[in-house]
Amino acid sequence: MINLVVGAGFSGATIARKLAEDMNEKVIIIDAKAHIAGNAYDYRDRNGIMIHQYGSHIFHTNLENVWQFIRRFTDFNTYMHKVIAVIDGIETTIPFNFRTLYDVFPETMAKRMEEKLLAHFEYNKKVPILEFQKQDDDDLKFLANYVYEKVFLHYTTKQWGVSPNEVDGAVTARVPVYLSCDPRYFQDKYQGIPSEGYAQTVKNMLDHPNIELRLNTKFSDFKGTYDRLFYTGPIDEFFDYKYGELPYRSVNFKLEELDIPYYQSNAVVNYPCNYDFTRIHEYKYYLNDQSDRTVIAKEYSEAFKRGKNDRYYPIPNENNAALYQKYLDEAKYLSNTYFLGRLGDYKYYDMDKAINRALELFEQIKGE
Ligand code: UDP
Image (cartoon, rainbow, N blue to C red; front, side, top):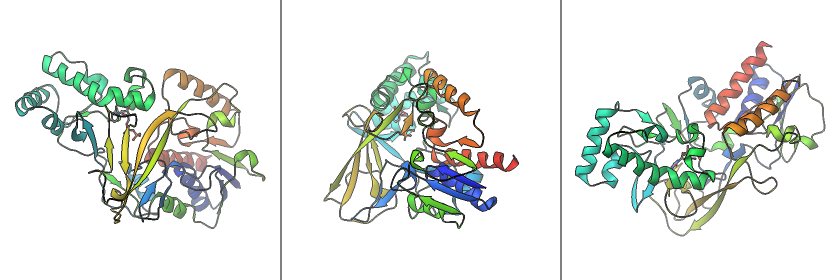
């Protein structure tokens, strides 16, 4: 059996490794780009700073099988991600939590809100903003409107180009109001940054005698035969956009190299209310890279346009789900062809979920 895997990101690399290792089958993996690791790609720049070319990637998971799998290819540092947001000029933690109350409100007011929250909600509960807005108490109503306005409204409008009500609830629920003092962005059991970076991790995954990697190779240019196809590229592109294009958001990173050791106090600082960019990344924090200089990236969200920029975020909503379903129905007629990954499944996967999806697909194939 020869397998062709299109796309050398986490999804493609996971399925490739499993086929090569567990089934002892040949795998050719191709990528249209000149590098592996997809949007998780990173590299060390001339200052020795590991740059996440497509924006910050933080590995986090509660999935034991995914953790066991990825740990074979990399060590992780003990980094726990926090996000700072600047709200009315005050630096505080995101998601909005009990500490945030004391950062942005006078103490007596913060205490009153805290008591009311504890009376209304269970401690440690995560409440999506759209649900949090359904409050009767005046203080809590004020708080819900405050959080909506200061954290979600403008950020989400910048990020998605529409108001939060038009964005699928699952997206804004990624950053809920957190009734806790835990300042971390993720509560997952396992989290960290690969010690040698993401590109090296994927390289290690692909380092197997049964795997052949071909970069700068589009699927349409691929010459050769194969028995099974695993396609992690855009499913609409595969079908020549016959039902229309699946929309995506793209991101533009403006990199700045600065002659100062540090620019900001944290790896990611969100600007939910000000400026055109959504956030600023300062990459040296991830692996604690030592340099007299620093590199930051200002993140500007924009619509995806074919041939102009890259796909980053599928846009989950009813229309797009219906369009995706048409392609999925079409895909059912193909034999030995499987779609996976953010672009193949048109799903807003985190890295661990993309790996898990590939592991599950592998189990399915093994049983066929
Ligand atoms: N979000 C927001 N304000 C913030 C951070 C996030 O409104 O300060 C919303 C926004 O709609 C965003 C979504 O929550 O698209 C998910 O954010 P997350 O940080 O998970 O996005 P990612 O890191 O995947 O780009």
